[in-house]
Length: 143
Image 1 (cartoon, rainbow, N blue to C red):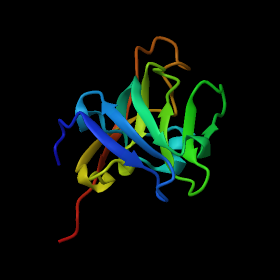
Image 2: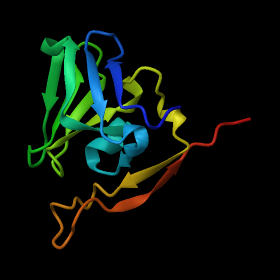
Image 3: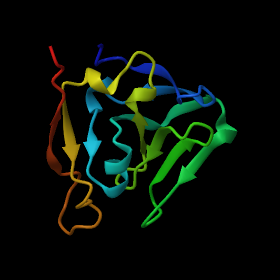
Image 4: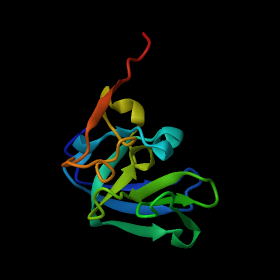
């Protein structure tokens, strides 16, 4: 896997939503999060600049989900239900993109991933300068 790739195409499971993404620092931004929503969706996210996502098809089927402070915007395909990307509350100048939606990328390609402490969100805790690391997630394939 080329961690330095800068641009990829992506799609939801059914192929209705198709998009192009220009990545910020390639796939090196891959991470997971412990917030209540991310725990349930279980996706590996990579970062793209705010203007780094171009929806090529299926924009009308994208549905936005917001919760709690309603600042973050999570987008998913209303046909197949797959989360495609989101605008995080902690940094609205970037998008988090579901790495599994990207051509040639699998969440199991990442042997080790940092996990951000989304339960104690930096915007909810005084004195916090940015995302804190909650731990590390490792994938060790069976032999």
